[in-house]
Length: 389
Image 1 (cartoon, rainbow, N blue to C red):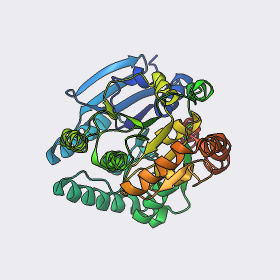
Image 2 (cartoon, rainbow, N blue to C red):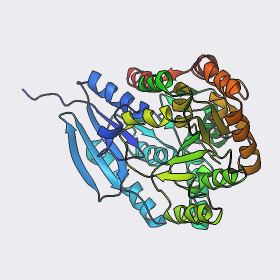
Image 3 (tube, rainbow, N blue to C red):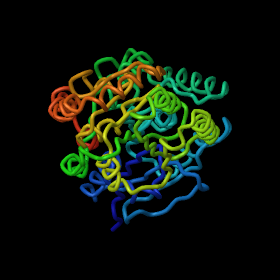
């Protein structure tokens, strides 16, 4: 008697599965692996990217993970699409769950050739970001054009569609007006460790410290933060910790030169260490203020982490950030790319402890009303996808 094969679910995420153990409590990883643990009746193919060569390996008995090399040139992006297609062809999943804007297009293309495969995209990603190179901009525009055409194809096999923010949903609806009213919003439940940071954080630390957690790349606007710090007089200037992996080495060099030119080496520290996600709360616990000067953001999970950690937050009014922050109630929103206004907001909150405490006090209750209402969790989204298959 032949044993019936288990259905295969493919999940694509724009990060390495080799490092998942470090980030197992990050909301995205946790939602995926909780779903896997509950469904031993399924086999899973996890596809991600890494700096290493193409590799496949077993995470557990019913889970195989593939890491594809991170693209460095336009031709690499095309090779990635081919790798996706070949992996799909090898396993022929019943459903593909692409997490990330760039992962949706190859999934849709495969479903056109293999109509029994359904697609349930979770839109996460920056629609306007293309790096600093003109070819990156042209490639991004081309990708969005092709994605728009693919999403508009009649009878596209998508039982569920999700977006991580209202901004992201609006962007998808502009690409494909036929999807209006069909895209559900998902939320990120934040680990209880960040509540620990809120309870234990030393609000009367001797040195006032600004924390920023962001990948080192131009869209994060870190040069704006550096310039803002230079506008604050040395006697009231805070320490700044910028934690994040270097994604653009030329930009990191630019930041280092700017820090040196403005004489800020004493105040600004870059931390590029690879940290277990569970240890991140300690950074929030040691800070006075969280600042995210980003120029483009689909959501900004670090803002959620900071708010849950009881940190006053200053962030730019871009992308999905206004989903989480109500200006003057549970945080401060400023326009992007304006170091003078950022400096003014930082100086005000560092001097005004009652305002800092009021923002922190309102953080979680406001999130419950403004962000978590009318959304399902990402973990519930995975369950809904399987139930509707």
